[in-house]
Image 1 (cartoon, rainbow over the protein chains, first blue to last red):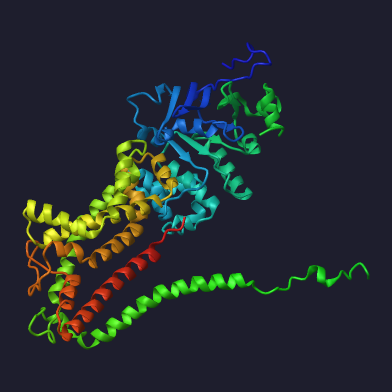
Image 2 (cartoon, one colour):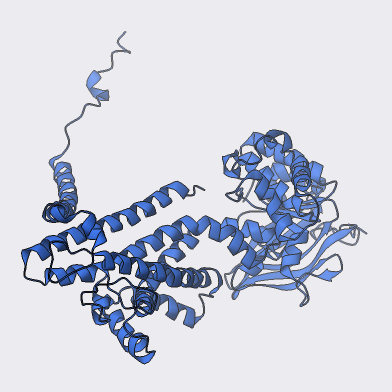
Length: 275
Length: 296
């Protein structure tokens, strides 16, 4: 189903994932009257890692935050166009954003553990969602999956803020996993971490992609190249009225984006000529 | 050799002495502090010295008396103050915290009415306390017919401290980083769950500190009670919220307006008690702040 052949080389490629979890069609995002992102078409494949890259202000985080309706929390933010989660319109009238966020987890740029114990950080999500089952085993399972169990199993009652930055971020991943989501969104999850901690998170992402669909926004092109299956390249364009809008330039298999991009702008960006 | 022998003077870092301006500025800062603390210290020493002979068990055990100032006490004032502050805490703290939660977490700041409310809360905090006394007299004591009772006094003082409680609770709530809210909401928590389980527990130390400071301001108030007619010497403790009462500041005021020297000594002793209560409350506030200070 990859509609490649019909397009000439001068048209940026936008491939479709075979088994899409999200289907985005003609998505624009407004902050009040300002159109931050314009006309995005994108599919996110099931149990794949999709990376969104591009220069600052290109709208990649804005698009990411539409996937779990976190943008609802910003007064005046409003999407136009459609995002389907499987077959359901994510912004349909009957959809409860609370339920959306439970099924679609998120990890933020700066590790943001709650100022509570490690155990309580993990147990919080299952508790507020009224999940059944033995809490101890839920916590253990989440920490094992996030490759943190061995480091913290003897200090579950300790304050989460006493962990290192990399550990805190893996705790946040464990916290997201604990509510058993289908998708994990990651908004520049390694930008506040050192290289060793970054490597650990990247390894973890590969591991998690067996069970979860992952969408990651990153400034680090090497990271996108290392971990992702598909990459979406965004950029900011200035229109005739002088306003900047984020646009999706190209969406393709990561190997192709980094070796043989179909758009000049992608090539310029990944070779470091701008951005 | 010649390459190594760079002239020493070129790299000298020796001090040229602190400029005079620096000294003058430092002295100005220090003397401002000394003036502020000096007067407080003088006041403390003065009242301690004057009131010392009367700081004893009879001060607590006895009721105020016009005829025998040398053995008169201030029990009704202390008990009255405790009643007022206790009842005020019960009424003003929950109301103030809930109002602060609304303003910080729910109110849409683009709406004009929310901005009007916000502006006027700051205005209310600046209204002189005597005005609240008039309000209490006119509306609570007369119109609602609550009379000159503990209830009237506590409601009036609640209204007086409410803006301060709201403002300090808002600051405490605002100090909880937005990333905590985002983290909670991203897990599928509702807004109320996020507030109740994450924001409020993190804000409680700040709210408690602000509330204690607001209440300790209320303890020193005399003006609204003057309006509410609690000015006379009360020789009994309040028996309930519908009982008449007096408070320490008013007790002190009525002692000082007597001509006999013994009353002035008694007033000083009562001031020492009042200051001791205030210092105790402020120390608890500071302790709470340091003990539970959050580091993100």
